[in-house]
Image 1 (cartoon, rainbow, N blue to C red):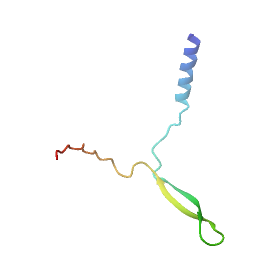
Image 2: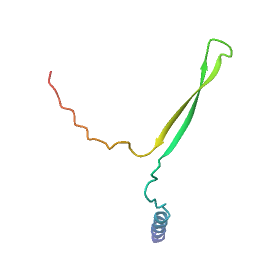
Image 3: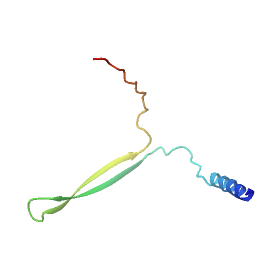
Image 4: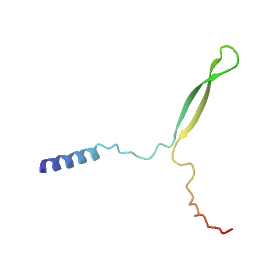
Length: 77
């Protein structure tokens, strides 16, 4: 019983030591792009075509600081 406890504690210490220590976040956020392909039916030959859209976004923390939202006030009609 004590062996399991000691082994568990040792594995927890090993897991904490193995964590990647991160310094300051990267000052240049990563830009990600994705292409979405949609199969579309049309009225003329070849009847099935592919349309694509490209979505681009920047991976980062929140763009602006969050603002507290006031709780709703009840009204009587």
